[in-house]
Length: 130
Ligand SMILES: [Fe+2]
Ligand SMILES: [Fe+2]
Image (cartoon, protein in one colour):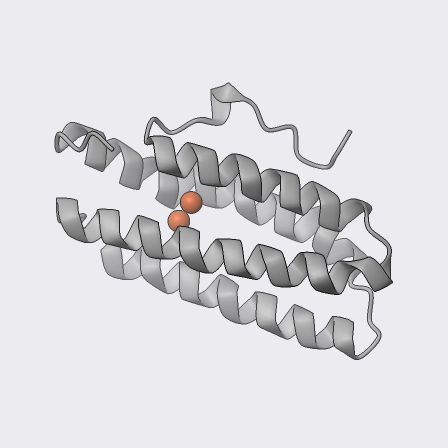
């Protein structure tokens, strides 16, 4: 049992987003369960996944002319910067347990429920079928 219980009820109806979010949830669960020494390589993989996922969402937003692209992209950039700060903290010997067991899982749920849900709804009603 991880900190996130991802399931089909959390799908937003855009296939690449749903597949990427399920991977992100698995990665966050692994990060939450890992000891401090194991977190660095897992975090590097998670950051890489996020970079690619965010780029895919931003491309979608551009394709469909999403009205809040700048806001959504800004939040992606903010969380990437935060993840890099946490990576630096890990390298400095700080395990950041609460970040991985509470803050990051909470962020994924909020982001899915707000910006990602609105983006997916807009894309679907725009006729996007990816
Ligand atoms: Fe997303
Ligand atoms: Fe997003």
